[in-house]
Length: 354
Image (cartoon, rainbow, N blue to C red; front, side):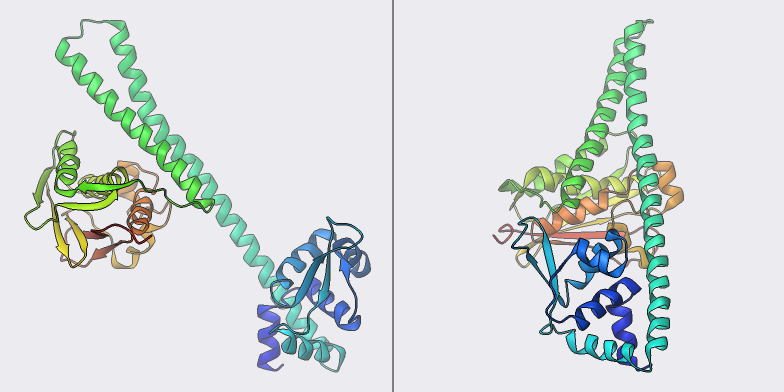
């Protein structure tokens, strides 16, 4: 079979139903048919014909509203479409001596397409199962801790003031963690539905914001060795202060979470032309070079063992990239000698282009 015909089958007519739809219109050049009419004429299930029509209308079928029924679409074959010459050649071969070879190629591609759809559905099902499992685990942990603290305080079993403050501090941290998980899920839901991050721009004191974020971690349980260099930082940037704080908190938190106890984490802020550049350098487990792009995918957790120990939904870096890009900046990993990793991001000092 000619290579051009094979490519047409692979890219366009990759199922027997699609071939039948095109062949019907090829033999009936002035026909306008509804979904139900085509299904009856081709002796195919309406859902199979509908799937074929959805694919074929992108390239060489016309669709208009029926004059008889305003809510009904009717379809016809477009000979002006870019794919039309290749389709004509395919259908001529199908009508001639190459009919058997064309059918064999279509059936083979149909089977491959079916296997790909099955694999995609299984992957989606696996992702859903994993997502529900991760969310359940991540929500259960802070809720359990908060309930434990409340029960201890309610019991009143000779808890000293110092112990009560410690318990309340622990509950407050878990409450913030719970709030962060729920907020990330809500934002993710909006982004997946096609929404954009809404920015509330103002002049943000960048050195102050970086200092406040780092101080929050200095008061945490792991007691990190945070080293902050703000000597060359721009004084202000036009940004959404809350989201920029979330971005900083995610990257600094990751550096601390995946680093050994008391290992140094360096945060350096400088100006590169019209951008503020933030570099976070740690001596933790790091991320291999082939994962540098994948770790920004939602739910991806590059270090599986470390992820199981430290928890997380795999949404942090996905959100970090969305925040940086919504401001007109970028986020990336820079190579460095082991151990650890170096992650950088920029935001324009004058704010995103509008």
